Image (cartoon, rainbow, N blue to C red; front, side, top):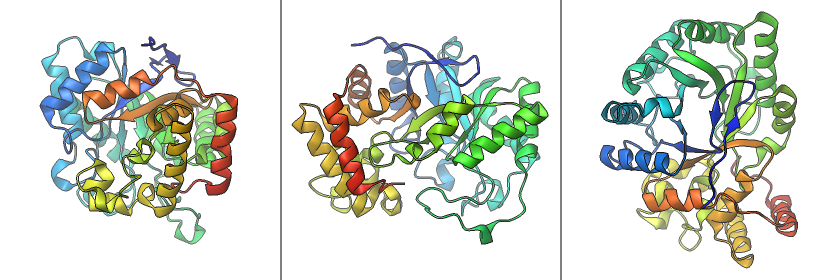
Length: 355
């Protein structure tokens, strides 16, 4: 079992482990007591970085909105002193995207919304400061969550990037937020946030949290160059492709998988990019390749992220202690050059089906 090192996020003073515990299952698949046990175990295994969001748990429902933050908050409250051992990241939701329980379904996120959302997250988390506060998805018109093409006819008047950064600056000045980041962003978006921040003396991005997995390497198509030149760190989410890269769906697909995993349990999630037939077909090839090289599919998929120069920290999501240990134990796994070449060959044939 390798000891996890620490890495610096962007140009900030945040020092985190290269594996981050994602918590979107807390409050839906994982109850409060079990979530506390997973948090305890992650801490025992050396993880010092946890990520959440105001809209979690997932799949999102009115009844569970904010539940993950509340569970983490109750964990902090029941374990005095543990908060100071961790780097805590959370997110403000972007425009509501049909969720009328988030700011009444508003199509914009105003400066006042930033303040209210941050205060609400602080209250649920029972903490005085958020180490990394991220915009969960862009406020402006942009293809995301499976969208492929930018459509300029959908542009609308929304809070500008400068106004968003000024709102975040106010939270930093108030001592409620230490550093800021983005999520589900494009190369242009990251570059523009950096340009505006540098031009106006506003908080500089430390991170961007985007999907990065064998079935979705969109980061490699330009965003990696932007991150390298701007000094912004990538937080890679869904490294196991929502479970497709564990082989759990290889034999049955997702609809026949019943209670196996999120794609099997929740019909709403089977409509997402991770459950596309093309994604499942590519995942089967990656999973078979892993076994040919004496690795489990999980080991290979995680090692691909863990060893990439692009990735500062990989966000893992689990529902059991066994899954958590498996993901952590994959640290230190290396992929031979010939295996990486075979991975690229599969990508050439399938491209990024879960983008």
